[in-house]
Image (cartoon, rainbow, N blue to C red; front, side):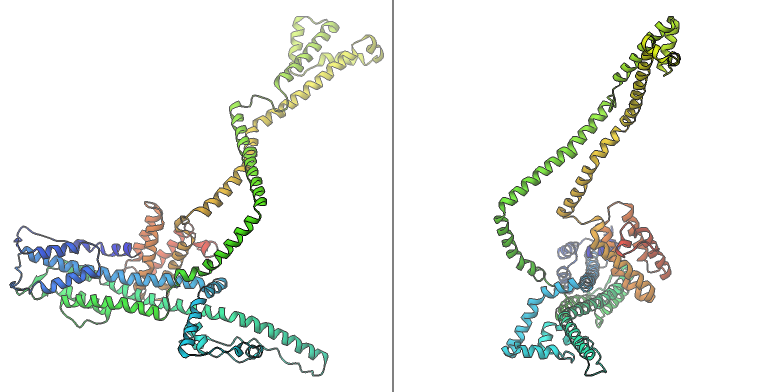
Length: 639
């Protein structure tokens, strides 16, 4: 975070520190040391380069045989450039230092807050930190030469401690287990449960039952309280560390805000001309001196020096001491996160025996597992072949065939039945009705349209004398023609159904392959999420949660803090948002550019608090849904 943030706030000052040579500058032959120092300062700011630059500037004007610097010499130009660059590097180092400390405190505070909110996380943390707590107890025993007696573990001693209703008193062993109790004795309270009221009716079965019930409930509550009491102490420890880190964060963020407020004064000082005295013993720049004086007051609270170079040297020493004191404070109050080994030792301790047990179990069941794996392989093969590849192949065949073949009946069979009906009807009409060719052709068209009026007339005449017509007439022929007509009608109905099914054949084919595709999609997503090492969209849930907390912190500062104070404390949260946008949002996207534009507006010190609140509200509306802030908050959009 510090790199992007520092570049954002210091890149506008870089042109003011560049070397500017004019045509009237007189070259000098004795400026190699200045040029090498100037070249050294062009790299990334560091305490070592600043210290070397200070040592060189302290000795350069008064070195033996040098009366001073000429006002129009090239050596003076390089000298001024070195001073400018030294001051600029000092300013960049201060921004880096306080931003790094406040950011680290913020991240650690969020880590302790996550532990504090979950009982399971507190219990896991208590287990992870158990070796260090026991080590402190052993050190206490060794220091005080206290002997642990076996009588302390007798049932009578445990019972006396168990049934004692008095509040727990702090003792060295408890303080060794939970060091925060040394400074917070009021945080410990009795874990004594509420004692049931006594019965007012003595010498009765009801009173005896109440006494027994009260004793049982008291015992259960006492056991539960005794078991949960270490978790309560561990939770309070996490809570205290979170609050201490938030205090450190606010203090460093306020100093950082004050440093950034001096940026305009530094810019004015760098723009001013350096007037070096003829003796070369001092630098005459009131704006720059004023900046350094205020800079020293903000960072170290001491500005006893009045000259430029002593002030720079004082500031560098103050930064070194500040870093040492900051680390010592975190170590003294045990505010840092536990080490990786501390967090991983339960897994490292349990992993070998679990691995050995699983290996033995697998080896003992190798035959069963081999059969199981064979079944799994066959199932996967059949799934891909029968439910994926074959249905996809059918889809391709359907697309290529174009729906020509029938599903229920073929067109040739329907045409053959219709031709048979036509021949039977025309033969009957020719023999019975004596139709000529013209009439037969017209009848053929009527048959194609499903009109059998001529046959029906013959049938109507025949059924008047059914016995006679059945023996010598055409009753049977007309009935067989109607049976053939019913068959043709049935074929045509089936052909219609067949046409409907054929039009939806591609849909049915895709429906058949859809379940297999859905299974492949779900399984592939699960495996991709299981094997992927990349973070989720826009940085993943953890980073989005951190940004969501930063947004809430900005809004809270704007609502409840005075104007000057909230502007200073906003710096850290805005740096957090900027770092998130530069590292997690898509490059060259409207989302990233719009997000950075809103941050730029919030960084404007001239903007009123009400206007910044409107910007915050716009950011909730614009980016809340896309970045998943409403889901993190546990609800939908209420804005």
